[in-house]
Structures are given as C-alpha cells and as structure tokens.
Length: 315
Figure: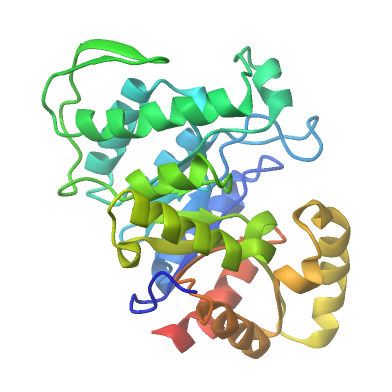
C-alpha cells in the first residue's frame, strides 16, 4: 500500500496558537529545536476552533517569530489556507522567510474549508470545487515565481503581469511543497501533479489505504513515479509519562476531538513506549512524516516528553 518506505522517519510538532500563549509557544519551539524535531508547524486559522470567541495568534507572524528563536528546526504550517493570500504575495512571503530562516521554510498549503472565518474576515467563500481550482492555479504559479524570473500569467482565477519574486528562496531548487486535502477526484490529482509530500489529515486517516491507492492511480495518470511522493500524517498524539497521568488528557481528547473520528482508533495514545509501538504500526502503512497534533496544543512539557522519550527510537 505504501508509496515509499525507504525515507527517514521525521516528526513535526504542531504548536497550536490558541489562548494567546506566545510564551509557551516560544519555549516549545526552542525545545523542538534542541531535541531534533524536523519541523514546527502552526495552524492557519483566523478564528479559534471550535470556540470562535477564543484567542488565536495569526500563523505567519507566529511562524516568522519562531524561526528567529530557533537554529535548526524547519518552520511550516498545517496547512496554509490558499484563500487568505494571493499566490504572488504568498510566493514573496515564503521566499522572504526562507531567506531569513537560512533555508528552513516548507510550504504546506490547502484549499481552505472553515466558512465562518472567511465571512468574519471578508473573504469570499466559493464552492469547494472553485477553492480547489484556485489552489490548482496557485501552486504552479508559486513554483514559477520562485525561479526569480519574470512571470506573466492569465488564469481563470489569478492574473499577474511581469510578476517577480526577488530574492528567490534560498533552498535549491525550491522549498518543499506539502499539500493537504483528501478529495479524490481533484485534490489528490493536484497532489500527484505538484506536491513533494501529501499530508493526510487525522480525519482521513481511517481511509488512508484507499486514499493512497487513489494517489497511486493519479501518479500513474500524470506520469509520475509514486515512490517520489511522501506521505505525512496529521497525527493526534495523547502522551503522558504514566498510565495514571494519561487518563485526564485522553478523556479530554475524546470529548474535544471527536470531530476527527474515533480518537481511540486514529490517535497515537499512551506512555512513550506505547506511542513508539503505535507509530511503528503507522510507519508500516507507509507514513514517514508525522505532524504531531498534541492534544494539549504542544505545551512545553509534552513536546519535551515526546522529544526525549519517543524521537530517539526512530533515529
């Protein structure tokens, strides 16, 4: 079933920006940097979820600030909403952050879905097909702009004349592109055409085998070797040092995160040793990059526990 199982196993820490907790985000970012996480990730939402009255820090500002606090860990989102920024502006922002971070940026992007925040911030909310169509124009346009050469583009959704992205990104040939989404007809076709990595959401994990088979078919249709496409997972992680300490966070996760599906079936749950065993099961399914959505939002003690007790098993 796996697209490829020969890659190194990597882990990202998703540091959720809810509740205005910059001090703990900064501490968690430094811990992830010190302990060898591949990347730190941020959610690209303008309203807190599920309670829109809560505080949430804007993703790009938080990501940039975190890049300046770290030295090795890469910075990304899970995932950016294409609707919030024009492709040309996003290409410029991404190139700038790649230069500032000395080549540590990864572009993770999706079509967008949370209608309420579109209305709250004055963005049009077109149909799902239109949003995917916009993303399908945006990704190749961003790639073209990253070459640093002038670009003229006349598409259905975007138009630019003599567009230029200088300086171009520091990474060569460009930063990695991660696309998140599970629509089988259009979105996974777009992944096969343009992504380096497909990010499977926690909500789609139960259908992983089927989604990967669809991706294989799309890769074949566009003339791509499926082994060149990496599979990442937005992995719910409920971890605690002891079984007694696990009870409260697991009960909370079952209540708050049920919209992802059956938490007990899809999440990585347990003490560090049990989490290691569960991750090995998921690796056997072809996943090589885990974006850890810690159910406490990535608090420092949790990031440290995972980094010290779980990461070494996969080096």
